[in-house]
Length: 276
Picture 1 (tube, one colour):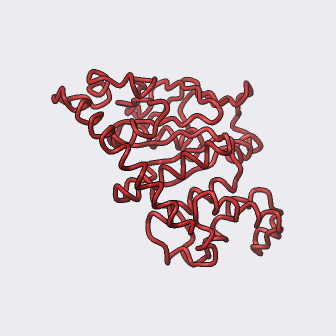
Picture 2 (tube, rainbow, N blue to C red):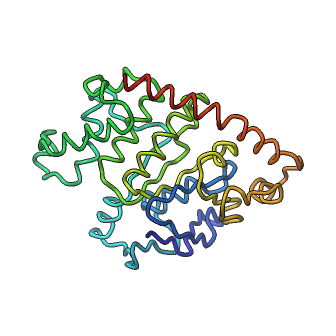
């Protein structure tokens, strides 16, 4: 279990995060929903210390992490990150990109020479299998589509064998069909490995469709934390201040329900085609 206790971040006089507290349980798929500037990306970057927080702490199984080098390495070993722009090494093969997730366990010499034990290669291939990308293992990363690159990013994060995964707007640049395929693989693969996920999204319909739990973030503060079914019109207006359309949630829910059955069938068909 991972606890985020009173996490805060300030940039001068601007408070990007204000005493954010969350508890994420093993295998839980949590969506952080909010507009641009709400603090979603800052939250993830503070959790894995890509950005140092102003205050608060991260606690794993009751043990808080300090700012020491050892604790930081342990934190980043247990917390994997999926970026919006994939962050693959384009000139390397898909397999080698996934093996980057194993480098924390390699000696500096083997890491610098890109020499991976057979056991690590097996782990990487299994992770590619989880996102249906084994057939692309020897392809260069720059030969892939955007959706395929993001699935490789998921496989790389899985290869790290983390306990907790952060996904920062992982489908922001993808079309709707590809977005659902990517989110389906992300959720299923993490469920299969009992990995907790904190996923930033700004699309209400995707959040309601994929999230088991919704955390509404607005102005750096948590304004909702609960089940998708509890996301009412009032909650949406708290997450998106100034929104004056009282029917926006009903429209999003109707859209989600209409698209859910069709999307699930379409995604299943796509996955079956890729596995053939």
